[in-house]
Image 1 (cartoon, one colour):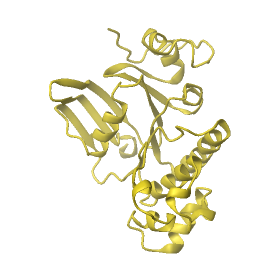
Image 2: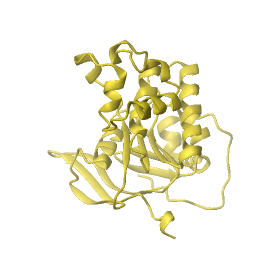
Image 3: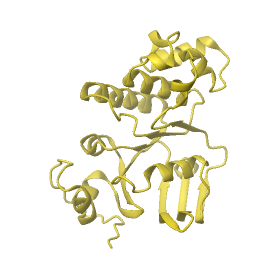
Length: 240
């Protein structure tokens, strides 16, 4: 069935910077409508992988195939722009290419940010900035939403609010979400699948399978805090 074809397929995806190997022969797919989360230690190559998927970093080997006509929405981990240029939120939203102010206002409202339209980007709190970034990423009605540590720096209520909003939007739009996260509790609760990255894919599968995998336990210990989970289907987990 066409709707089950992957949005993204990577085979042997390798990225180098000079002689340094950043990503080592990754195989993975991202499917329509799924919530896929990428976890891994600092320096594991998570942001490198996102930059490769969105096309701002060239690959050194293997293949990366995007579904023809794929529409991507992206929220970066840090936004230097608002520190450099005074810019109201509405103008920032207009950078998405949407010229209709009412449509921009509607999307801000959908992302619980309607009161921010005339505020300066540089005056926003962390949670407000993330909701505006999400609204702008959704303006193009993406098939795939890529979020790089969207809750970094938010307190727990702000984090919970953001995840609840994201879940509502997923249900409404069926957008696939590929998210980098450091919050293991939320990852295990909110994801359909998890990829654990440390230059190579240490292990991948449903949260329950990944949480029991020796590679995951070695990297993160018991910090995910989920109950032991037995599963008869063994998904691919490779170990060094």
